[in-house]
Image 1 (cartoon, rainbow, N blue to C red):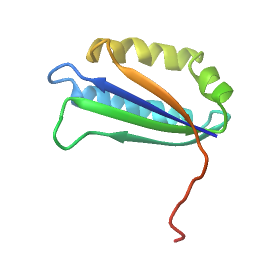
Image 2 (cartoon, rainbow, N blue to C red):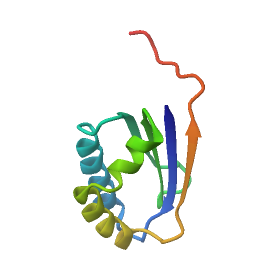
Image 3 (cartoon, rainbow, N blue to C red):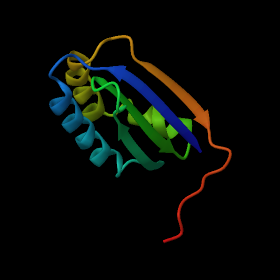
Image 4 (cartoon, rainbow, N blue to C red):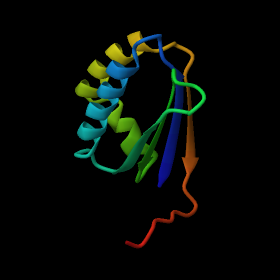
Length: 101
């Protein structure tokens, strides 16, 4: 299992549209092979910063999603709403824990 952490700076006044596009992207990921979960975060002290955390069964599953035509279409619009210098890091998941509700 892997967790992907992407951090980016948004253009001024693009937060609402950018967040909505990511929500749509999360909905489309639910049907993808290997998708486990995702989170969209905004640091309390940096309103134009966004962090996406996605967890996948494998790196191959995550990479295949990036070749999906719907993903590529939304990426073009997202790229216009954010600065180019975003960062992405992949982590192998050693252990996961969740509340037992």
